[in-house]
Image (cartoon, rainbow, N blue to C red):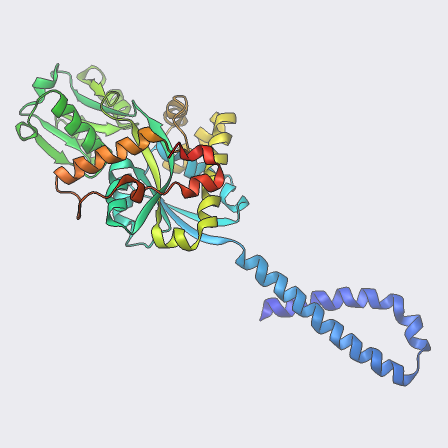
Length: 359
């Protein structure tokens, strides 16, 4: 109501300024004509007030409120930079970002918080998509060396893992890396003691000697080596086992009801990636402040040029592979859905057909 009154006063002031130019003419008209002008004045004022109010309401309703959940490492840079540089607002979307210890943790909170979007790695993404209430709409990141197996220096070969305490974040793509590594080297997972720890818990346990190694993503391998020096080594990176992908998942009902908002979010993420390519130091500083880490840690990720919005046939094959892995481990509530039902390329096509690959 206060806002409407202020609009009315503003419209009155504007009207009075215009009316001063008409005073001489009004003084010359008859009293009867003056009454007619008074009625016209009142009608004009009402119309002006109505227009001001309509414009105010239209402007307020223009921006869609959106909640995006993410993990807490540099792979989520496109979302962070888009928020901090106002790129979502530029598209007419007001985004609130909530950060969790990992994408897997963000995925678990997605339904509880009724978020519009969540960004997470491929494994937790597929778990969400397979339930049918969420759908993949974009990709933010792809890098083959983004994860590593870090072990104590006494472990020299894959066979040395047997009998050791190895940590990872179950429900994350690091779990897939661990089991893929063991399978390739013909090691039964039951011969290890596999612990489910958050990234920070893992780092602390490794440095204190409570575990013998871990499988995790950047920046934790480098942090462990920095803390342990020659007492720690990289046993393997994820290259050759899988390519780390970070996907943007939307609440399916929200996406179907607000397709243009989904497209706007994708456009903002595209612009964020372009901004990072042109201004890597500033992007690194922005993300470092948000994640409370060193800019050099973020810059190490930027320099491998992993940020990408599009989806291609390699992405589709990885989704199918992850689906089968999760089904075999009893992690899916239902039989795996076809990949085309889990990732909807229409939203990428609406921005640029080239982003959606060949299918």
